[in-house]
Amino acid sequence: MTARSNSHVVVIGGGVIGASSAYFLRKAGFRVTLLEKDTLGSGCSHGNCGLVCPSDALPLASPGAVWSTLKTLFKRHNPLYIKPRISPRLWLWLAKFALRCNEKHMLQSAAARMPLLESSLDLYQSLIATEQIECEWQKNGLLYVYKDQAAMDGYQPTDEFLSRHFSLSAKRLDSCALYELEPAVADDVAGGWFYEDDAHLRPDKLMSEWKRVLQHYDVDIRESTEVFKFKRKGLKANGVLTRDGVIEADQFVLAVGAISPRWEKEIGSDIPIQPGKGYSLTFPKPQYSPRIPMIFPQHRVAMTPMMSGYRLGSTMEFSGYDTTINRRRIELLKAGAEPYLREPYGDHVVEQWYGWRPMIYHGIPIIDTSPRMDNVLVATGHNMLGLSMGPATGKLVSEIISGEPTHVSATPYQLLGK
Ligand SMILES: Cc1cc2nc3c(=O)[nH]c(=O)nc-3n(C[C@H](O)[C@H](O)[C@H](O)COP(=O)(O)OP(=O)(O)OC[C@H]3O[C@@H](n4cnc5c(N)ncnc54)[C@H](O)[C@@H]3O)c2cc1C
Image (cartoon, protein in one colour):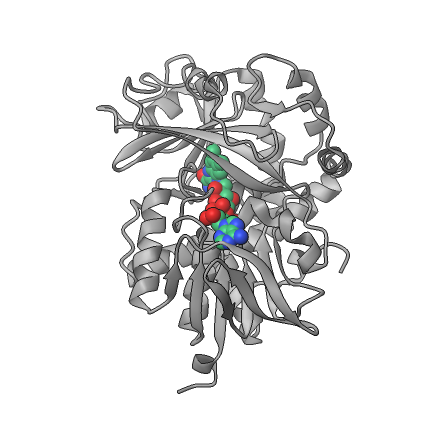
């Protein structure tokens, strides 16, 4: 028996970040218990768009973002919605976001996100092969499709920026070339930019496969087990309190996604996250399904053709921890896909869903130990890219806890103010 197999790690939160962390910790030899308040994979990791997309490395906070947001904020069909309310926390978040909307900070955020994105793409491929994970993985690339020529041309500087700083360049396709590659697009789109190396999968299948794999490796998964607080002794936690009593462990990982701010006091640091509510609609696979996923930046909608279905997703709503489904906003997904596709959606909706993205204003995840309890590691704030960054985050979590050299630098992911 190794020293690590005597060491017990409790992972709190069974989303893609918690599940990936549990996997790599178990593979590193730790005894692992995963605690999830509902069922594994039932949070934001369930119905997202399933894109594994290093091409989306640029954060939302980018030059011009404030102005373009203000211009459209009060339009009826705006995919971005901020519920008017008195919330100093939200307004502080928005102010900090606005201060990041410049090229210097955009580059800093993208440079921090890229290693997790690139490493995760590689890790998905090896994990899917070695663990025989059946999640409808397809490496067909990703298309950014534009309706108007001006908007299509407007992407050129972004392509040049990504190419210059990250050697990530897209293929520019005019409408004919785009139609040749993907005949499902409408006749009158202006064209698209194609990132060949991106991939996609079916997120709910990924999560049920994570459950199978974790159980196979004897990770103790306890669903319907909400963690209420840490039990502390000096500078360490020695247990967590649940409905079933205290669960003791040597190390803890807090991976609770958008709900993270509720832990600020116990962690001893700001966790400046807002829930960024997004919706998805899933349909049966259409007869003439597109092969390549697409993002329609002008309408901020994504379309994912999965092997067993077809999904439209997006919208960004800052309305707190709101659990209602707003019919008008979910209809925006359909309206947003209509201009771009011959058959934008079917009649029969299999699932309508919302999730709270863990939105941190600068777009850089937090993967760091608590200043109050040095055996508690926080892994959250993956914004719109948690699925795309899951495996590398899990690996990094395991490396930090093991005290091993890390496969990507952990420096960019420190808690603020540390
Ligand atoms: C519409 C939409 C589309 C998206 N598309 C993409 C995409 O294409 N590609 C991509 O990379 N990302 C995408 N995302 C973002 C991605 O879904 C998230 O970044 C990711 O799921 C966050 O994972 P997580 O594990 O941090 O959070 P979650 O999946 O929310 O997991 C956190 C878990 O913690 C549990 N929990 C909370 N509190 C406790 C507690 N006290 N005790 C026990 N358990 C607790 C919750 O129940 C939950 O299951 C999308 C998001 C949305 C909304």
